[in-house]
Image 1 (cartoon, rainbow, N blue to C red):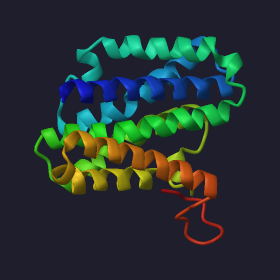
Image 2 (image 1 turned 90 degrees about the vertical axis):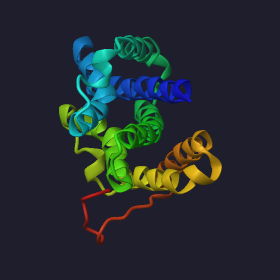
Image 3 (image 1 turned 30 degrees about the vertical axis):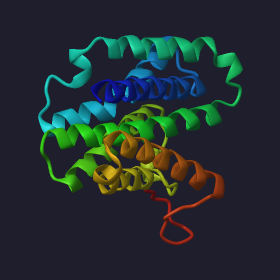
Length: 206
C-alpha cells in the first residue's frame, strides 16, 4: 500500500511540474523562470499542507527524489514543447490529473495525523489546488480556484467520495475511484461549461 501511495505522490509531482512548466512557456519566461514555476506548482500545495499539520521538515525536503522528478518533468516539457502545440489544452490536462492525484494524497496524509475527516478533506483540497494558485499568481493570472470554473469543488467531491467508500471497497480501490471522479468531474465541467457561479455576472469560482 505504501508503494501505491508513493507512486501516486511521484506521479502527481511529475504532472504538476509539467503544468507549471507549460504555464511558464505560455508566458514566455526564461529557462529559470519556467523551472521555478514547475517547482512551486509541484510542491506548493503539499508544502502548505505539511506546514499546517506540523509535518516538518516538509516531505520534499526529506526525499531528493522529488527534485529529480521535477527536473525531469521540466526537461520533458521543455524538450517536447514543439509537440505540445496547444499549450493551454496540455496544461489543462496535466493540471487536472495533478489535482485528482493530490486531492487523495493530501487527504491520506492528513488522516495519518489523526485529524477529523472534514479537516482531512479540506487539506486534500489545499494539497491539490494551492500549487496551482502560486503558479497562477506568479504568471500574473487569476487563480483557477477563484474563477467560476468547477475546480476545488471537484476535489471536494472526490475527497468525500473516498471517505464514504474506503470501508466498503477497501482503501486502494476507493483511492482509484476518487481520483477518477475528480478527473471526470473537472473534465466534464470544462467540456460542458458547468459552473457554480452566483448569477450571470459572477466572476468568483470554486
